[in-house]
Length: 258
Image (cartoon, rainbow, N blue to C red):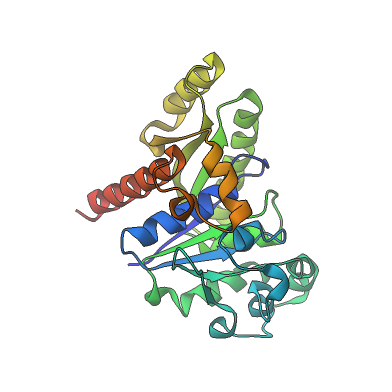
């Protein structure tokens, strides 16, 4: 059964797009069939996967508003090999145009319903704000992965996001739940990091992934080469962390299935 996961956080700069790209690449490396959907008008996940957003004939925008179909827009990433619905600045217009369309909050869900059987995992990179694009992602997803730094302001943002997920679950998508919380840019030498980690475990228990993503130069460099870190430097701490995350997710899924 296909698992559809939104990577979301209303706070920017927490490693959301980094997680989307590298989780997709790591799941693909485990021989799973993966689709990455870029729902951020900045198109960073698109560029970070080796696809030039300026050269796109069709993007996720065209599919959402009905001007292209999935097969016209989907591309295969050149190095990692996962499929992608890419994005560019055109997606900004979708914010306005979706308001005038029927079933505006479920356009992405309807789109993915027609192709989900092709994939084991569909990963959706959300913009760092609560808007119609994020709402579409949350309505389409079964679970939300929340990347966050272990700092004080991140906890405040997490509280707001949990409220949002709860509201979407009540009004649009009763299947939606928090899949897991991923600690990024993790530095165990920092006292605040360990304090925030402790608070996360006390509030969310086993929904906090054991895997942590450390601060890693290779992880930061990889997007400038249009590569997931697994293809840029598979021996790096960042690559090892995202492979570990993929493994942890797969084990959790197997336990639920049993």
